[in-house]
Structures are given as C-alpha cells and as structure tokens.
Length: 461
Ligand code: PLP
Image (cartoon, protein in one colour):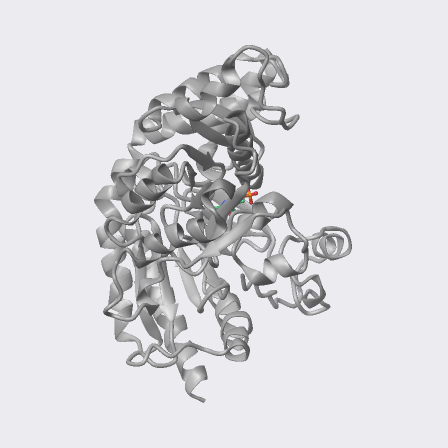
C-alpha cells in the first residue's frame, strides 16, 4: 500500500518527534519521515470525518482501513464499554464464559446464514484466519484425514500477516521476506476479469481451483479460502456462478470453504455477511474489523454445525486460543455496534445508496487515466491505466512515482483519505463509513476528479 508522508513545516512537533522516535508504524517506510515530512496525526473523528492535530478535516473514505462502518464518534459504543467495566472488566474464554460473549455469539449465529452457529472469538483478522486454517486441519484429522493440510487461496489476496495466515496471503512481496512460511499455501488465479481475455469462460477461475486440488492431490487439501470481493488488487468481484461452482468443487473433494469476510461482513456489501450477497454457504466465515466498528479490537471465526460438531464430543477440544479473545469490553462494544446497525438499518442504507455511489464513480471514466471502476456495496475501486484502449498499466517505477510520489499525498492534502494501492495494478480504493450519503459521494467525486486530472498531466509529461 502506498502511504506517503506529509509535508507541513511549522507544525507543533512534540507528538511528531515522539512518534518518529518511538512509534513503529505498520507497513510504513519509517525512514521517509524526516525533518520536513510529518507522520499524519489523526486526533478526532465524527461521522464520516476525521481531524488531524492542526484541525484539518478529512473525509474518511476508507473507514479507517475498512473498520469504522458505523462511523466515527459514536459515544454509545464507549458507554457500553464503560458499563461493562462496572460489571466485569475481564474474564477469559479459556474454559470459562461470561454473559457478553455468550450473548454476542448467539447474536452472530442468529445473523449468520444457514448453520453457521458456532463462534470462536479472536482479537483480530489474522488470528481469525489463523484459527480457521488450524480448525480446517484439525477437522480433517478428526475424520482420519490428517494428510489434508494445504490451503488454496488466490493470487494477490490478503489474508493477514501471521505466518499461517501469510501462507494463504498471495502477495509475493509480503511473503518472500519471511519465508519459509507455514507449509501448504497454494495459489490460484483471482477474478480480475478486467484483465481477462474477452472470450475467457466466466468460470475459468473457479475451475482453476479444482485443477489445483487435483494437482496437489485431494487427500492433501484442507481448505479453500476466498473473500466475497477480493480486496487486494482492487475489489475483484466474482463472475456469476463463481462461488456456486467453488462450493460444488469443495463438496466433491471434501475441502472446507472458508469465506474470509474480515472486510466484506458487517454491511460493507449491503448485507450482514458478504456470502449472502453472492448466495453461497461457506463452512467457516472469518470476521473482524467492523464487528465492533473497530471501537474495540475483535475478530471471530464462525463455523458450521458440521465443522464444529466433532469438537463438541466427549473429551475432544480445539486446542487453540488467545487470552484476549471475546474480551467482555469488546463483546459489549460489538453488541452496541450491532444495535446501531439494526436501529439505523445500515445494510439497507448501503443497498439503497450503492448505485448512486457507483454511478458517481463511473463518471470518472471520462478521465483518460481511469481504466476500470468495480466493486460492490460501499467497497469500490478505480484502476488507473496509461492507455484506456489497450489497458496498458504502469511499470513498477511509474506506479511508485504515481502512487507514493503523488496520489497518496495529494488526495490527503485535498482532504480525502482513501487507498492508493499497487499490490496488483495501481488502484484507488474507496470504502466510506456505511452512513455516507450523497454529500460525501459528491465530495469524493470532486477530490478524485481534480487529483486524477492532475495525475494524468504528470503522467503525460
Ligand atoms: N483477512 C482479510 C480479508 C483482511 O482484509 C485482513 C486485514 O485487512 C486480514 C485478514 C487480517 O486482519 P488483521 O489486520 O485484523 O489481522
């Protein structure tokens, strides 16, 4: 991801200096924050907007990394946490339970489609994916198929950074520096249909999963992990029938289907879960981020009755856990967050407004640098190209100059936080809070139109 440092000479430097000296930012080039380059410092949030330490306002077009779906500044979520502290500060789920985790697990099960009824909490998304991969291996072992350990994921997909989750992540630059990873990660093509030849069969990428299972040997494959809409690469949506075909393939080869919904759950695609949008039934769903709208860190895996059942018998157990998982404060915040979702019908709002949002982005097609606009719900991407007709993309050096050298910083300077990403071909991604409406869409459009027009002038030079 391209995050540029910001230049604003004369800022109050005390927090800046402490940050530069002591804070280690994730996925960031710390060396780029020098004398005249500040770390963006966000100090306050309200609705769809956040404010920096100098009082500048930004439209949070990425919901703080796909997290704050209910919007910023919901004091009732903090109040729920405060009430919880008065009752019970912390207890662990290692052989104990507490009321909020029970209520939340039951509520998630009631919202999840089909028989996704068993909730295993984690502290975040990577832990949820890690847990799902371990669960898949363990599930097969319990059925006498201990050789089934591999996971099939898609190229360029991001599934987290812990060594197990990273083995599913399909981004070479993130993997290669940390190899050897947990063995068993296999990768297949994604659904970047913009780059497919026109005569390619719509189920080509789904069929590639079956070919890979057969190549690896079905006896060795534990799971397939897929996002409903793949984030990295820029909001790749599935062709019609893709997930139904994957479901058939998984059933045929006794492979678990894991829907990684760390981004796509909790209204992002206009439904509680992304799989509902595309009408498929996974065996396991992983969630995090907006489960609490990120007012507290929390993730979970949700397993079907069939997958959970062997672990519920006699002396069996899932020998896995995290101290903070299902924390009472996070559980209370999640309950309050889901109350907000229900009271304000945020999923319905996304469904009602997504075409307006999308149409506004589509008008950017008039700009020569805009090659494709794609996505679903409040999760959209714009792919940038050098040549609209041929779809020619930027080479590595040009993408670096365009994204880090210009776009990231300029969008921020003009008051829009969104993502300029080059983990695949260069894209700009937008995922505003689910309360965003016409006013925010227009603001996003105005900033993008100006910045992309200027970007094209630079490209042509
Ligand atoms: N899976 C997906 C699809 C994600 O988008 C992410 C993070 O963005 C993760 C897993 C990892 O989540 P976390 O950063 O909470 O560990």
